[in-house]
Amino acid sequence: MTDLFAATTDAQPSREQLGEGAVLLRNCVGHDEAALLADLRAIIKAAPFRHLVTPGGHTMSVAMTNCGRVGWVSDSSGYRYDPVDPDSGQTWPSMPPSLRSLAARAAAEGGYKGFTPDACLINRYKPGAKLSLHQDKDELDLGAPIVSVSLGLPATFLFGGLTRNVAQRRYRLTHGDVVVWGGPSRLAYHGVAPLPAGEHAVMGAQRINLTFRKTR
Ligand code: MD3
Ligand code: FE
Image (cartoon, rainbow, N blue to C red; front, top):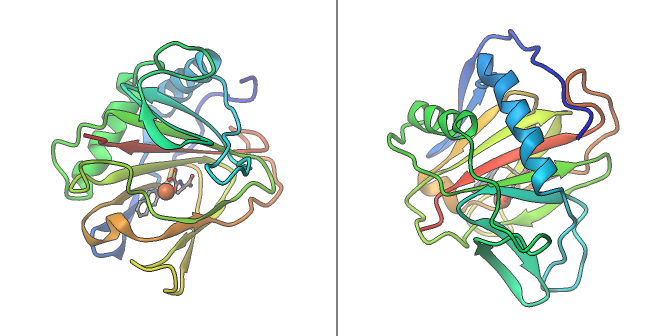
């Protein structure tokens, strides 16, 4: 990727409870940012973003890649965590310490000490890209939280309930925001509204979201 540059944010960290087990840590990335972005760039070079096809045959507007022991993949046969990148035939890039330590630090701040993710799904949104309402339930260890890190353009995140029909609350997630989703919130329906056009000083015309997961 050519449009990732060095760090910028000095904004103050803050904490907001979104729901039972769900904590929003604004500006949580802090001085790890430059190392994080450099490592992210290397991952994307080794395992470029691609648009996956859902089992229903739709091509996703969000482009994805992964790092870690396994990566989340989708094709016409279904969803799964796979140690092999189907595009390269190689294992996914390993999860660098800059990413792993941010995830563990955020999880601990959210009340989950000893978080050891084995997968990091990396989502890239260009303007217009969205993620439809869904649950994350492909992981065997639903007692572990998911930690999400937002980078680049702001997005509207939709946070619903344990069934599809619960009205969603909307949160604006911006560069450097981290959310820890555990406890009863772990199986909440959620999604991302279509990304508005814009230009972010560090990341350019895109949003990148990292989700750290413990799959087993
Ligand atoms: C709430 N990603 O990759 S991160 C996903 O911004 C995903 O790219 C979104 O949903 C994104 O699956 C949202 C926030 C998130 C992640 C997992 C959750 C929220 C969650 C699991 C349970 C409840
Ligand atoms: Fe999700």
